[in-house]
Length: 274
Ligand SMILES: NC(=O)c1ccc[n+]([C@@H]2O[C@H](COP(=O)([O-])OP(=O)(O)OC[C@H]3O[C@@H](n4cnc5c(N)ncnc54)[C@H](OP(=O)(O)O)[C@@H]3O)[C@@H](O)[C@H]2O)c1
Image 1 (cartoon, rainbow, N blue to C red):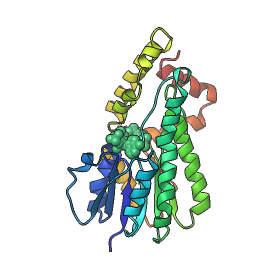
Image 2 (spheres, helix red, strand yellow):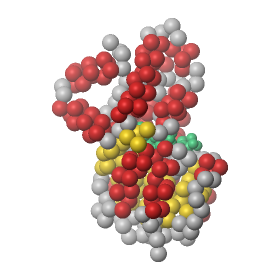
Image 3 (spheres, rainbow, N blue to C red):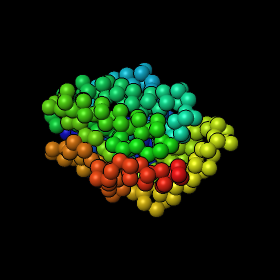
Image 4 (tube, helix red, strand yellow):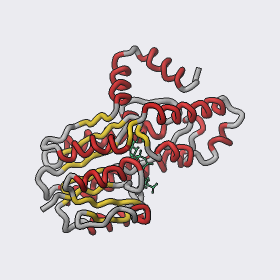
C-alpha cells in the first residue's frame, strides 16, 4: 500500500513542482490549493487527491483533515506562504498580522489538524517550509523575515515535543525561481504611494531591481528545490534541516563568521541603504 503526503500551496512554485515528483517516486499525493481550479491540469490517477485548502480558514483545514481521515498519511509539507515586504517604518500592523496569519498561524493550524493522522503511521514526518530568511534578516523584508524566524522556532519546539513520534524537518531554501517575487509586489498594496517622497522611494525601486536580478541570475529552479524536498520525504532518517541552495548555505556561514558590523554594512550596501 502506498504512503500519502499532503502538500499545501500546490497552485504554483515549489508545491506544484513537488506533486509530479512525489507521484513518480510512488507516493500518493493530496495536492491542495486555495482554488482547486489551479490544480485542474494535474493528470488524474489513483495516486492523486485534489482538495481545497486555505491555511487561514479553520473550516477549510478541518474539512481537508476529515477528507484525509481514511488515508495512510505519512507526510505533511507545509509549503503555502507569501512574502510581505516593505520598510518596517511604513508597515501597517494589519499587513504584519496578515503575513503571520498565513505563514505562521496557518502553518501551525494545519500541522495540528494533521498530527493525529500522521501519528498513526510509522516513520511519519512534517516538513515545515521556512527560508534562509528564518535564520537571518535582510532589510525591507521585515514581515517575511519575522514570519520565517517564527516558523523555525515553532518547528524546533515541535520537534522537542513530538519528534520521537513524528519527525520535524525544517526546509530552508535560498532564492528559488517561482511566482514568489511577483507576489511580493502584488501584496504591496499602496506601499509605493506611502513611500513616495520619503527616503524609501529610491530604495524600494532598487530593492525590486536587486531581487528580480538575483532571482533571474542565481535562483534555483523550483523542480530542483522540490527534488531536495522529495529526498527528505523518502529518507529513512529525515534530516532536521534541509538547507537548499548555495546562497542559503553561504549566507548562513557568512553571517556566522563576519563581525556583525561588517555583515550589516554589507546588507545596507546591497539594498541601497547607504
Ligand atoms: N521562492 C523563493 O525564493 C523561496 C525561498 C525560500 C522559501 N520560500 C517558501 O516556499 C514556499 C512556496 O513558495 P513559492 O516560492 O513556491 O511561491 P509561489 O509560487 O508564490 O507559491 C506559493 C503558494 O502558496 C499558496 N498560498 C498563499 N497563501 C495561501 C493560503 N492562505 N492558503 C493556501 N495556500 C496559500 C499560493 O496559492 P495561491 O495561488 O492561491 O496564491 C501558492 O500556491 C513559501 O512558504 C515560501 O515562503 C520560497
